[in-house]
Length: 522
Ligand code: MN
Image 1: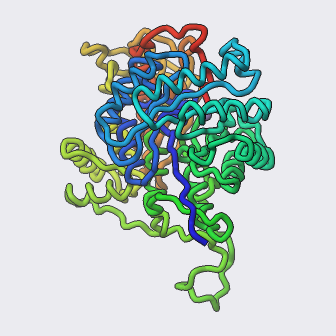
Image 2 (image 1 turned 180 degrees about the vertical axis):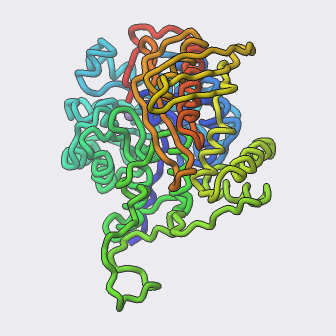
Image 3 (image 1 turned 30 degrees about the vertical axis):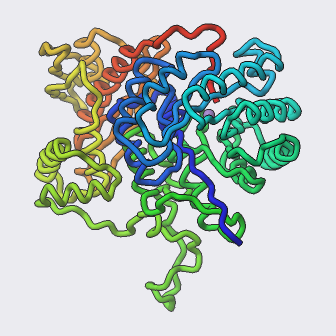
């Protein structure tokens, strides 16, 4: 049986980024994009440049920094400006395409587009026309496919094939489909649409019912050859199809699916880890393929077993994914080159200037900490090198707390280049610290989330704090790392404030007209 190639369309940076509170800086996005290229994705959706000035700049910067995969931008069907903006970014790259969409279900159509089914067919045709002015490579998505009338889906796909789309993507936008429904609709479309053999068929699933991966597989079984996915399955609500899961199912069960992908398996683990580090979204312990417990067994191994032999219960070889069971730890007196190698291994390649800064931070950590784990190094780099441009800087923190005294904090910060110091009491050292920072910045965001996590074992471990901050409608996550948990909390709070600034600085390119509003998009 010859193997069928399944294309991996990565949308971590477009759809995946829609995790509530997650805002990635340009630098962070570029970092993730570079790692996705190493991973070997076939298509890389770099963003939705029409959405805002910030999105435009980020997508441009990504495109300027990566090559290899087909680079794709999303454009709203009714907005010529979106296509223009997307093409401004993509024009000079070798391998590129445009991605547009229309609502398929009546619910979406009526709510977001306020047009009849016939009119939507026209909108789609016109959108593909806009895209084809720039490129032959046009992906056309049907939004909310599985709550749509299947007859209308067939009509939409026929229109898209006739209009010249080269790829048709069925999106289960709301995570509603079941595998059997996916199979039957794709089967029906393939039977009824003329010329469908000429286009790439694609699937985009959400995980609201935990079926994103299963639905994507059902589509592959029916001949779909491209899967949209995100690293660690991150995305809005319950997230998207997890890249690492779909790839490893196809790899592990070749006997069933007969499919291959172009993914470099040994980059899976470094990619998942670095995306988790950069986004601050922790990988749950039991997460398939890359969770911290994914290859940890409680089984009592009989003494007679040869320990060198591959255990009979392991269907996936973790070595193949780039998971090192006993990673070689970096010595405290490691050279800059050794640190560089280690970072490569961890999916965090740095440029020389960044490596210099990382090395300085590493030496400082080595003085304070007994054993330096890989996770310590990852955190350090994310903290020291990838920080968002800062309006607020934390310069100094001193807290006193205990069972008798009233906890109080003294904080010194730089705000717009000016040094300000203040102090406040609180119910605990963290509360006192947050209150002081709020006094200094004269802002009072609501604390919606506060998480503390020890990155590695031991009492000198680095503590990671994630805070959720809310001001009006804006919710962001801030992250801070330090061997002192109160300091990590302060850093997280300040990081959150800076992220809010980043978000506010990026107004939309143009106000969305009523016609153009599609949220959630696909
Ligand atoms: Mn989506």
